[in-house]
Amino acid sequence: MADHKKIDEATGVETVGHEWDGIEELNNPLPRWWVLTFYACILFAIAYVVIYPAIPGRHKASDGLWKWSSRGALAAEVAAADKARGPVMAALGATPIEAIGSTLPSILPSSIAGGLRYNRDGFVRHRIMLITSAFGVPAAVIGSRLSRAVPGNGHALMIATAVLVGYTAYRTAFPSTPPPDESLPETLHERWWLLGLIGIAAGALSGLLGIGGGILMVPAFSTLVGLPLKDTIATSLACVGVFAIPGTITHAIQGDINWTFALALAAGVIPGARIGARFTIASTDRTLRYTVGTALGVIALIYGIGELFALR
Image (tube, rainbow, N blue to C red; front, side):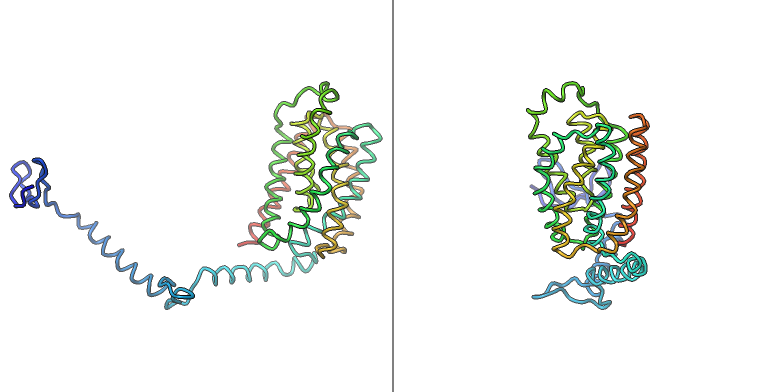
């Protein structure tokens, strides 16, 4: 490698004096805009280190001239959100974790009222309900115990509820093709494990999110098990009532239930369950799918947007 500078004949530009196997490097200066940008980045970095926490120390970073930190900003935003929601939460009398636990006591009377109506018309599949409930009851207790272990003081669970309700809305309105219902009695004894898995997942969600588990059982019974939609809704409602019992007991022991809130909900859901059952029995499957899917979709949007605004 030669180390001498010269003028390149083809370009008229001076070389840097380096040569590798006949290849020479031209001494082209960097564009002025690039140089200015580079110096500006250096100045910005120096200013950032001085103004913001950036220099690591033994216990924490330097405070910076502006005394700003992401933790402090987050704490201020949370305090502002709590203050803005104060009147609403005071009127409802329930914290986010109480909103999860307080819904389960109201699920039991609604499932009884609606379940009796469905059972009278023969839509409840008792064997499916028993197998699913046997696996779901202990899972409901575990889910209830885990509700306080999830970080976010209940907000993360409320957002997860909105996502699951939205998924159920989509799967209800636009289901995949289920297997023929005629094959169900012959294959059910071989698929108890599937009902067990559905029960475990639905029971855990019932205790964890306070939503009964129907949002999982409706698409699962319809798509995986192959039940008609009316049988799906009726059987899942019966299972929901069973899951609500251990979930309610566990949340009550943990102090997660606001009984004023729960009793007010229970008083309203009983007539609603009867009306819903009557509408379901009288509707065609197509009408029922689109109606239930649309209603759940609207609920998921309201639920999710409200919690996202609460976290701002």
